[in-house]
Length: 627
Image (cartoon, rainbow, N blue to C red; front, side, top):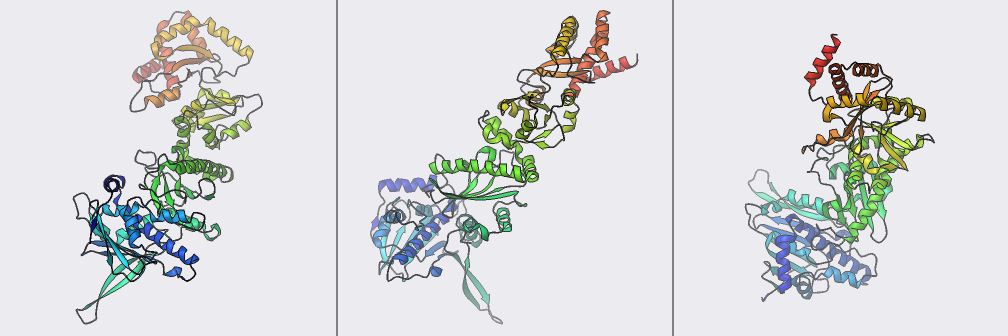
């Protein structure tokens, strides 16, 4: 038996693959099972075209056996097998694939389903093995041959005994280390778990040999029996015709595969034919996972190629704003290359991701239109993710996501879309009004809200910390600009009312300047307003940073000490105006200062802002009440 050497390039590739490319050692089984499936496919295909060859498809199978004493794993198929030359060609030269050649030779025939293409998956066996033995008998040869290798140092091929056609691979496990327990691959439950995870939909039965010892009655003797347990389901649920799959089956599949205790809120399955063909089976959960809004959450869909799982969570298939979607993609166009975990910068993945994005949006829009109750439930769990998609893309994704957003309306305190808000607008309205606050109840009590509602305008109530940032990013919807009712520019007065207010403010500029001195840098401007109905005072903001945005930004861990440009507006029609003017005219500046500080404290409390010195304000209020 003559020892042969791998070529230098092959030697380097083998070493790199074992130590670097395949970091997840358990996928060796997936690779060898896929190769076995290929071999059976080739045999079955040959039987369809050969005149004197009959194969019973029910007899085709893959078997797995473990020997704990010898520490070996054996994978056996009854496929087409390999000749001595094919063993040399396919296993002696890394990246030389018999499956690829077979596919090239039959590329015009559409019914070929060959999984392996690059011939390197076989070498993943060396991640767990210190020796690999391959016994194979080709359907075209009378003799069987054995290929033996202990890794990069080389291999040998010799004739051996094997009666039936097919291939038998014997893996001798490496010794356990402190980091890796190779013995786990000798356990039945481990093999069963790996088959379910990666190869559940190989369309030939994968059978595990189970050895059972039973004691004879009234005797110490034991008998050893061997049984075979089929580990894979073979037919994926997404490849069954839709008419044959009940909703309960989809729900069970979802809860089992994605570890959820509740059924999904929506299921959609799609078959796409084109430059990249694939089948998708997607689910929208009914609630957010406990870790969804944490760094630990991993987005992604299961990625299959011809029923073989390549990756459990392919993040490139989903944009962040649709990261809540669960499910899988199965495509025959995706290659099983030397690193099946590597999908970045992959053309097929990019194309699938683009079509998926459109499909998910359409499904959400359909749910919004046809199943409003469930959509609102979905939005309460995942709406923040949609909003963040607009904000984080600097508005580039607003066309994709804006029609999926919901906000509470001031009219009936129910959810409304931006499209519905615009449809309800009067012909002379060109602004979408909104108000911010911690709760619907608190927003409803804001002084600025009262007068806008009285004028008959609908207001969007924003309670999510991200809401106003999103609207600021969007700037407008359907040509209508957004405006915070607490914005200084907000003015619903008639021209006559505006002119009268302007004169009143000009007349009392000295009063306002004096009051501003008492508040120092707390406010930028003080002025009279008509925006308040019964309330004496309110705060408005000027510029891009509103009071609500100031609260959000300053509540973050890295306190940015952001300050909004604040205007204190006093209701010109309230009795308090007369009192302030009277104090200024009498030059009772001490009393004027007390009134100013109390008014400002009131305005901050209404906005949900803290007071810097609550004790001082409490004493001032008590002092004025006692007079």
